Picture 1 (cartoon, rainbow, N blue to C red):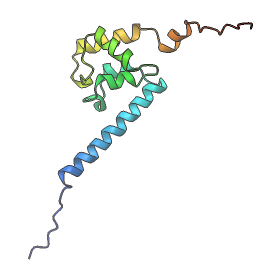
Picture 2 (tube, rainbow, N blue to C red; picture 1 turned 135 degrees about the vertical axis):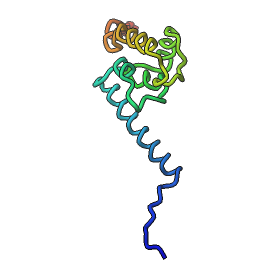
Picture 3 (cartoon, one colour; picture 1 turned 90 degrees about the vertical axis):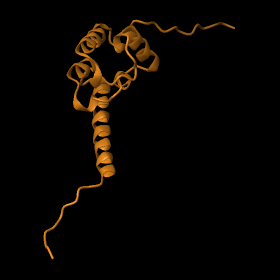
Picture 4 (cartoon, one colour; picture 1 turned 180 degrees about the vertical axis):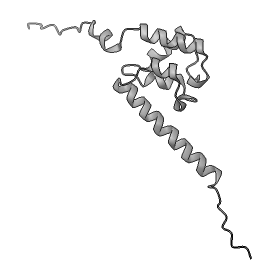
Length: 125
């Protein structure tokens, strides 16, 4: 009898789950940093970190404050680019064009400040 110990690797599905959790947590952290304004989407698109390799560009755009589905779709139609396109598969030309357009746009916080709210009109009865 042989007394050598054999080390078995974890089953493939457990390794896949661990990797999926790692990616999910990294993306959540990235989205939080974008939402908090620590990093801009343009910087993320230009640097393309590992967690964005398979992340749809729509998810990244929607992580910005005041960027909903309609605004993201309009932006991507102006590029033109599919909303399901992974950030990792974007060409250098696409990355630069999207980053240029994002930095040229007024920030949502200042864009909303120029609008005036209608004040309720007091009606004497």
